[in-house]
Length: 49
Image 1 (tube, rainbow, N blue to C red):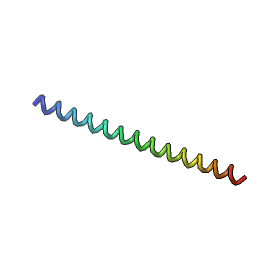
Image 2 (cartoon, helix red, strand yellow):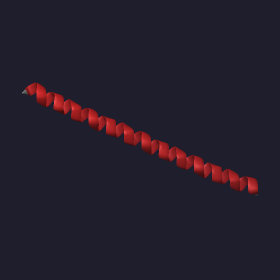
Image 3 (cartoon, helix red, strand yellow):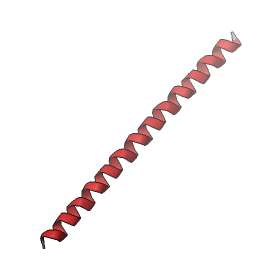
Image 4 (spheres, rainbow, N blue to C red):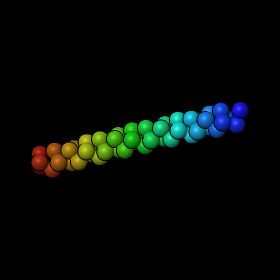
């Protein structure tokens, strides 16, 4: 009984860690994409003038 509770606990912790890692990866990806778009827009604005 104790071993199964520990396994469930470990599974829940692993799932939470995986979800947190996915959220961090998505956040970093979209932040970089936004920054790249801002830099491109700035470059285009400067090259037009």
